[in-house]
Image (tube, rainbow, N blue to C red; front, top):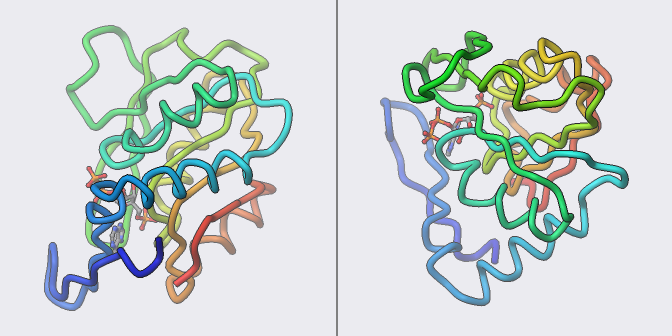
Length: 169
Ligand SMILES: O=P(O)(O)OC[C@H]1O[C@H](OP(=O)(O)OP(=O)(O)O)[C@H](O)[C@@H]1O
Ligand SMILES: Nc1ncnc2[nH]cnc12
């Protein structure tokens, strides 16, 4: 599955080595392996899976189905139609915002945050803020690929978040 990841240099901005996961998803065995591995890594006792737009949506609903949980979408600005909780995020190559529908994460729920790539960890920090804004708790963060050189794990673990990743590169 690791051999299917493609490096694209200078995308989306100069100096960034972009890890393209589309070949993993396009390969039936790669896709199966990716989801099965992530499901195996998931912590126990999850009430809900939160997926981060866009590429977190490639993984999160399949993982939620396997765990018997619901899926909640954390979306980019102005995409959700109802009232939202919002948080800014700073990532490897820019700034953005994430939002979740108010009331969709039940208070007290143990939430697993799912995304494709952990780089600086900025996106995951914003996603964790949203979970806590909903008076729920972050049961863990589950990602397909961790870019160890950017050390996003450090800040997340300092915050007490259990970070699990299928592949480290
Ligand atoms: O750890 P970080 O430095 O925060 O980077 C990781 C984030 O960057 C990418 O999202 P991007 O904003 O490119 O959006 P996309 O999923 O819509 O392509 C990726 O899918 C993660 O969400
Ligand atoms: N280098 C990278 N490749 C793919 N997705 C990313 N998200 C943040 N940094 C990334």
